[in-house]
Length: 639
Image (cartoon, rainbow, N blue to C red; front, side, top):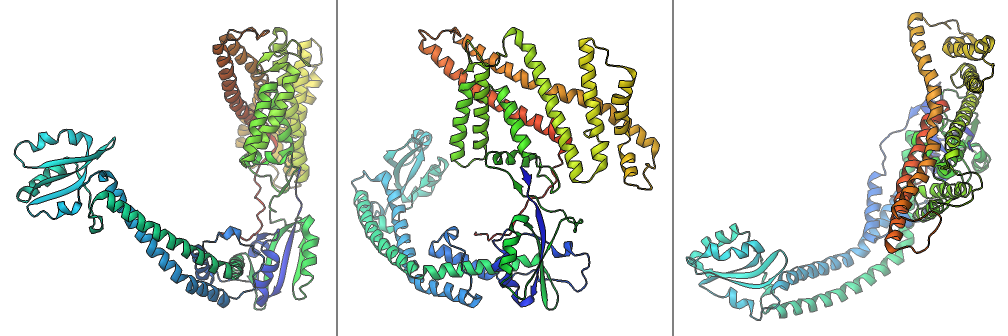
């Protein structure tokens, strides 16, 4: 449960070896590149590389080559990359010459099949007609139009034609939306008739010469032609596959080579050079430094230098989290708020524990918890990050369900801890939730002080609202309230002065005191009136926040009661005694099933959101900045 330690590396070598060194030791290695001009404060003699990548066109040619060869780039092993650009181009041209004839023939037959399919699709609506289409088109005094009408237009056809037009419409078939057929009219009035049918939204069916004949016979003939074309295509596909198999290794090598060359050149925007040498800088996990050093020992002309982050204080190392498999899924939730900075406490472990715990208490039910865990298992199999989280939260909910004696909302006669909804336990549940909140807020303060130690920020440790001063005030106030409720006389003047007033004064003067500890000359703010006025309002807000943040955790107990209450409603609707399931009717069973499903989904979503709110607003806001940048090593990207 930590942020992995990093070291800054500098790789220096002969300028002519840049691409080779990058391809052999940088691409695919666990190195987060840093811009050299941000690393070195003295940049005399350094020059940036040309940003224009000369391999762009060749990369596009190889991408097109893969598409032509129907090869998925993600299936290509990126291990060998010794081909030169000239050899890569030769491979692409050779493949194109080998398959161009086959592809041209395939395109021809696919076009013929498509044309025939289009004619078949046009003729299918008049396939039942027994006449020869040529007879229609050979008539000299009659004009024929094939097509379709909307059904509503067909119903009004006689109304538009009436007795004034010697026109006949033959219906061949119909669907839910259209009526298919042909209308015939004398040539002398064809323009008027065409206009009428256009106003009725008639859509013409343009039949090519190949469609002439008896429709059913034409369809049969065209399907026969397509079968022959399909056999030709199958033979061409077989020939194409044989050609690709012969040159597949060459294609793989060429694509791997251009990918390495393309991305090696892209890395130049991070690097710099002099007239003779190149310079590369980046961050490497401390655990992998020995392996990188051992690998580069094989390069006598290349120098590798390691530096600790403390030496380059002007740079902020990237963040790489190192958590075990059980906690790792919760990193996604933490990342919603932001990644921890390199020198900041990784909250993933604390988040996982508190999130699961509060979720389990609020959702405590054996049956619902196990169902939620099952859903998490199914979701995880689909690769969704929520799957493992649902499994963990489901199992914790089932554990609390055992402690509460609840299974699918059915209250058992016994419980290992106590029943939240029992009249005598309701207040205990709510008070217990507030106690949990106080403990969690305290843990957040301790983590904040740990962050102060890591960042060597004495003001954050001693004078922060979540540092030592805030910690003392918070628990002094809690002890004071408890003593007052119990009737004890702890609240003496010295107690209030030392443990309540003094910590508040220290928090009020945090900035000047922190500057004073750091021995800064200008430790007091220049605008003193503005400083005191702003801090006065902030102190009022701070005191209220201690109260509201603690009471906010009462929702943990409230949702535990809410779960039991919602299930009581379900059982009441089903009219079933919570102590007997004998003689259940079908309707009662359905109410129970649907009620459990509703509670399972609705309350599960509400609880998940409420716990996340408590984590972000009541905990993270006290100790976590989330300003880290992700560790992003330069890997070979396969398009």
